Amino acid sequence: MWGLGGCAPYPLMPLRIGAHPWPGYELLYLARQRGQLDPQQVRLIEFPSASASLRALAVRSIEGAALTLDEVLLARSRGIDLTVVAVLNESRGADVVLVQPGLQAPGALHGKRIGVESSATGALMLDAFWPVKAWPPETCRWWR
Figure 1 (cartoon, rainbow, N blue to C red):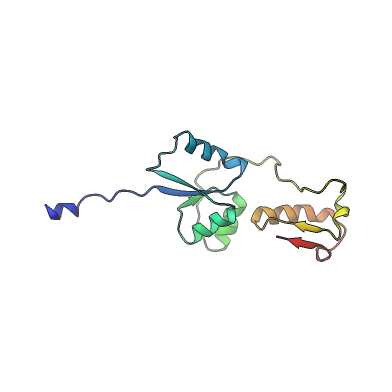
Figure 2 (cartoon, rainbow, N blue to C red):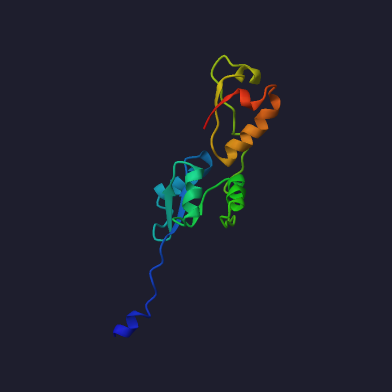
């Protein structure tokens, strides 16, 4: 009888998937809320940012994550072996540069403190936005 215990299959652990608050991932949270994610198969783990999900992937505390394709490329360039298994949505220009009221043109940001998200998306946004400016980036105060 004792020998047969070693032949029993191990219970499978749920697949741990990281996600952070972002409109494109809300369907994952909704599916969990409605009981459409079987907790025996999938465990959705909330992180504050994509960077936190990437750190969890790097140390293997999760098996997958909801990420943008640029974040996947960044992770792969840092040695994290990732494979895209599904594309959940498509961006249609939801990323924006926000400014305080009264700043009407990019030139009005010269010498101001500028906040940039420390992520692949933040870097892409900054790169796309910067060519329209007429001053060197060193003249701004960056807040990350």
